[in-house]
Figure 1 (cartoon, protein in one colour):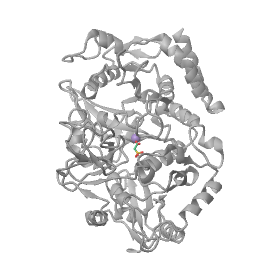
Figure 2 (cartoon, rainbow, N blue to C red; figure 1 turned 30 degrees about the vertical axis):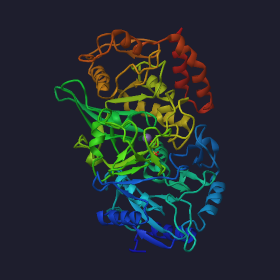
Figure 3 (cartoon, rainbow, N blue to C red; figure 1 turned 135 degrees about the horizontal axis):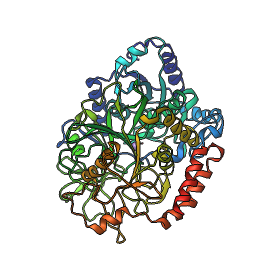
Figure 4 (tube, rainbow, N blue to C red; figure 1 turned 60 degrees about the horizontal axis):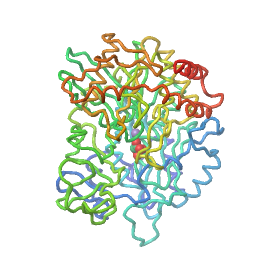
Length: 595
Ligand code: SAT
Ligand code: MN
C-alpha cells in the first residue's frame, strides 16, 4: 500500500477486502493529474485505451459486447424485509445475497491491483456532500471516477480518524492466474453479475461488470439508490434530475429540475441554447439533483457529480452544440467508432458518415455495414467544467433555489407537448404515473411503454410507494414555497410517424411558458389531464410549424386517456397498502374529469 490510512473504519475495511479479494497490490488514489496519467499509461500499454489524435488527452475504450449497459435485472435492493425494497426493485435477503457475493469476491482480484478511490459527491467539504470510498480492481473505473466525482486526498483528510463514508466495493470479477494475459475488457458472465445495495447499512457491493452505472458507483448506486434512502430518513430529496438556470430578458433567473428516464434527452435539455431571443440557459447538472430546504423555506438543489456520462449517438452540433464543444479534449469515450484519422464517430454526428471506420466491436465498418458503428449506448465521460455553458454557480455549496419541476418521457402518442399540474398532489400523481418507451440505456426490448415513476424506477433505493409518500410529505413541508410541476413530451409523432415538435433549442418556448405561469403572466385552459397553454400563449415566433401540427401536438384525446386507466390502475395496484391515499384520490379525480 502506497500510503498510511488514518481513518479506523477505512483501514479495517481495506484489510477485510484485501483478505477476501486477494489483490496483488493495493493503491490508494489521491485524484492528481499525475495519477490519472499513470493509469492511462497502464491502459495504453495494455492497448485497452486507444489515443485519439484529433482530440487531445482523449481516449477510446471498447467494452465486452456483453457488458454495454446497466443491468437492471441483476440490480438488487437488499433490505431485511422484501416490502422495504418494494415492487419495483429486485430483492434478495441480505445474508443470502452477501453469502453468494462473498463466494464470488473470494480471490476475485488475483493478478490485479486494488484501487482505493476516496471521492466526494458534491463539492469537497460542502454540508450537502457525501463521502464515498470505492474499492475497485479496474483502472478504467479509476479514471472515470476522476472525471465523474471529486477524487481527492482532501477527502481522506476530511475523514480524519473517525469520519463516516459510504463503502462501495467493486470488482470486474475476472481474476488472473499467473502469466495469464488480461482480456481487453475483463468482466464476469451475466449470471454472476450483481449490483447490490444495502440501504440500511449505506453499503454498495458490485460484481462482474465494468460498465457505467454498474461500476462507477458514485453515480446511480450512491447518488441515487443509497442517497434516496438516506434522503427519506433525513427529510431531503435525491432525484434523477437535470438542473438548469434559465434567465429571462429582464435578467430574472429561474431554476428548473427535470426528470426523464435514461436516454430521453436530459443532457440535451440541460445544455440547451434557447431559440427565442433574450433568453439564456446555463447548465448546472445533467443527471442527478440533491435537494434540501434552505433557510428561506425554498428547495435548493446541487449537482453531486463532477462530469457528464452522456449518450454519444445522436449528439451533434444540431442536437447539442454545447455538449459537442465539451468533448474537444480530456474525454473518455466508450463504445464509439474509431475513424481512420484518429477521431471518434457515432451515428447522428454532424457531417458525412466516414467511408471507413472501426466499429465498437473492433471490426471494419463501412456505410454498407448492417450493424451500427457505435453502440447505441456508447458514452462520453467529460469534465463538467469544460462545458461552455456551465453555470458559474454550479459548485455553490448551498445550491440553487428550484422554481419548476418537470417530468416527462418519450411517447409517440397520447401525451401532449406540455401541461401543468393542478397542484402539488396532482404533480406527484403525474410523476408517479410517468411513462416512457424503452431505450438503449436499459437492457430490454426497445420501444415498449413502461411506467417509470419520476424516472426513478431503476434508481429508488426503497419501496416506491413510500417514495410517493415522501414526495407528498415534502410538498406539505414546502407549502406555498414548493416548485410548480409540469409534464412534457417532446416526442409526439404524427399519424405518418414523424416527430411533430422540433425539440432541442425550441424547447425553450415551452420553458418560457412555464416561467410565465410561475410569474402569473399567462393563463391556461383546464383539461382532464391538467392545465394546457391557451392558443397563442406558447411563443412560436419564427418557428416553421403549421397550425394543424401545433393542434395535433396539443390534442388531449379523452378516449386515449380513458384507455390508459386500466394500466395506471394495475401500476398503482402493485404498491398495495403502500400506495398513499392521496394518490388514490388523485386517480379518482382524474377518472371523474375524464367523464
Ligand atoms: O450507465 S449509467 O447508469 O451511468 C447511465 C444511465 O443509464 O443513465
Ligand atoms: Mn440517468
